[in-house]
Length: 234
Picture 1 (cartoon, helix red, strand yellow):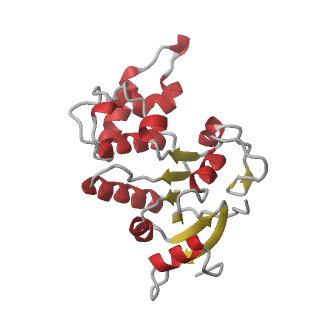
Picture 2 (cartoon, one colour):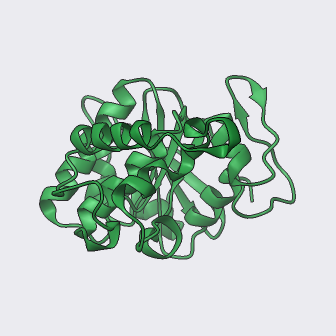
């Protein structure tokens, strides 16, 4: 309800709020994973028709689910297959014959680019650590060449080293001109990576917190909006 906002190319927009505030629900509506009853999604001034996730992906919107094992990865498939499954149509030749060499090259390139620690792309993705699983899922999203990426709890269940690498990936993606939206329950995390933060409460955007050279985003300002004790902008 009342959740209109803009995400700009090249920025990292954070979305914070208490559990149950509606952050993930909002992301799923934008991505078409859940059906909307009203509202519009516009990219580069063009209103999109999104009837489901495939429409969003084709339009240039990617969504990293907060539940990588249940909703993101195919744990019993290889790293290669997980990275390529979203763009498998590109490798289909006449008669539906797949170009396995192209898929292998794509996976090898992604493993190197995102520093996925594995001995081989043919290892099942379920055998990887949490951080490397997350990077494999990010690699799949990047193969769709998105203009906007929504990261929902991007470092949940990963170790400190993997967190730093994911922050680096997010920063590099923003610098490349992609609009990044990060949903996180970790206040130090979202304050550390976001250029500005929207705060949700009870299904509404309760306020927005900006950073400036003299006043960085503070946890106190975010919590004030989360609990309903602040004005609209801080």
